Length: 115
Length: 115
Image (cartoon, rainbow over all chains, first blue to last red; front, side, top):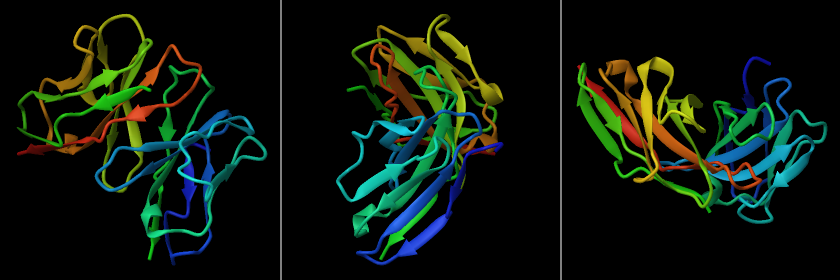
């Protein structure tokens, strides 16, 4: 597509529920990133995919968070047993390849609110 | 690990005046530096980057930034501010000497341009 698409744009859930957030990157972009942005903070790195594999998942806060990219395009961020502290805007970005000089193109984000 | 500091939470300028948004960084290898802008309810948009070469880089919407290795800074500047420049600005850094894609962001600076 023309840009990075994220769905849903807003998600309200109850503590303890399971949540999935979807990212559709720019067509042909092999690198895909997930970030989390809390109120008043900059984006915090979560995980990076190169193709289908998670090249770096060092930013995932704990084992309740998991992400997949089975066909090297769309990615899903999965959060189990949600907690109120998980409330944030989850940002997805993609870039042409793994070069560190490449610019990241961001989606509009998925705002997660855990009640 | 690489890191970025944006020492000002808020910058206020009058329309037509020059603006500066400050950023300092810390990396062990060569810095790859980026500026992004975020408008309300929108994703982050790329403004400009420094990878190598001329220390003064020019980007979108009349913005420029100067890489200063001795001061480890990458301040964002614009000669004449517009009201429409009011937004949240993020500086980001990658370590060009590492084989990863971890882009670290600062906490952001809110720029307000008053008519």
